[in-house]
Image 1 (spheres, rainbow, N blue to C red):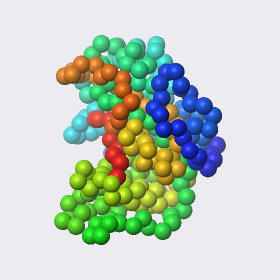
Image 2 (cartoon, rainbow, N blue to C red):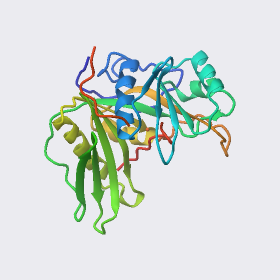
Image 3 (tube, rainbow, N blue to C red):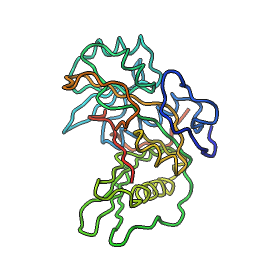
Image 4 (spheres, helix red, strand yellow):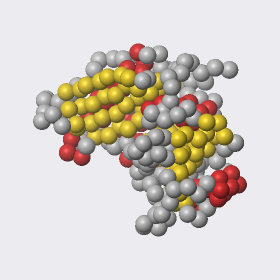
Length: 277
């Protein structure tokens, strides 16, 4: 079930206000589980990981070198499931992605696990046919290329260095935006919008009709300004030592492969980081 994106609220989710009121959440999917199922397949494709493996809690994705991490993705997390999962999986470099408020996840995880990043969001939008190319500042140039089901976009500065980048994986009619970043010296020039426009246009041309991404709180405003809506909160937990102690839940930013597949029928080593232009 899809609809034209509207405007979402700008405040982060907490246990007190989740789920969001009607009109403040994405409705491109029937529920969060459906959205997460679509996202995890595209995300795994973008990261060059193996096909997501179905598990009792949702999915497990294993990434290869250099990180070699195991990512447990829980579309519908609850306290019992999280306690059992984090209590029985004790290998370092294990990650857990839960689409619940971060304060809930922080209270459920077993000793040895921590929330190393701040809360984020799963967001979606309806993809439209490409319009006019987004303008670039003088001297900047955009390069795009596609390989293994993933389209990459890179903006080069006048000196030839990478100023902004991103990628998008198309899996059937869903496209997952990933690794969008604008380098600090080139922010506030609109480069993030240029990258997003190039990626979503390429995905639309390849038949994708809905886009998904994992966003930080910092990047959320950029996406909402271009029609994206929050589908669910997203919190990441990691198994391993935390040099600064367990992360206190905050409202700051949260960072957010497999074979190409046809239309769908009847871990990251670190949180995805999305930075504003």
